[in-house]
Image (cartoon, rainbow, N blue to C red; front, side, top):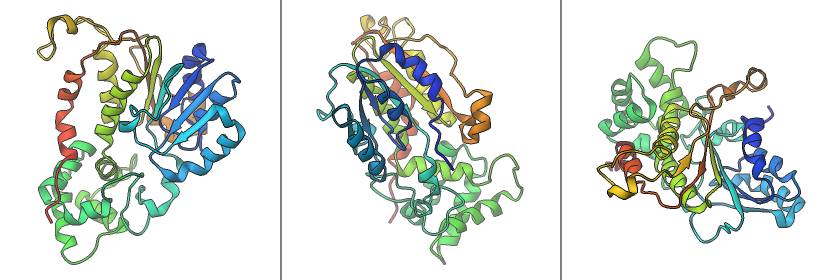
Length: 326
């Protein structure tokens, strides 16, 4: 099972006009994008990843390209720290997918094919999925499943979890059984548990605020003329990225959040209104890429007020702050 960096050709065609500078790869993973960018002799790459297990791949590149590649084990929300040298920064890239290695590592419990303890931690976490399933109230579980998984049977599944956990510790297999019993019928297109696992993973890794902070930090880091490019894999991520680029590339009449002068400022130039999706050829090679969407924008202004962006997704951010009961 080879790991394919998704939409690699398309991404490179967007950033290659800027070659001859530094590129920030915010989701190093298996290093697919970084390796490709480093093939050009004048490029440097700073790569980050919250998952320390990817360090083996990073070490290989550090050896091969010693002064052109640097890796740091941090999260998106930390990229505005002084650790990152932004001299000559040309593009910032986010690929929000999970690598095949992460999914196949059954100890992480990211996949409903996993067995054993519910973990789902991607690194630098405050708690595991096991703690969520064991300690969250029925109502909070319902909210997580509904808003992060868009799961029709959220109420039923939350109720069932609370019932089952009274008598046993729920592991990955138990969770898929609970979902199956709550749903009663099989969807042949996607696994019954897909949305529940997605919702829990988003919650455990605080993926919503990480993405929102990551995008704002990327804007603050990149100079005018630089590109921010993001590959998303589900509709919540795509909604956030789409709003960020589209809303701030239009001249609007004054927003109720911003002083009049600020709201007439465009922050981005958006060349493509529609997302770029994988070619038929890529879909044949790599089925998981089917849900991938690539969006990008060029920064054209240093002044930007992101109050409206944060307000727009406030409900999703608030869910991340739900507290355990016990």
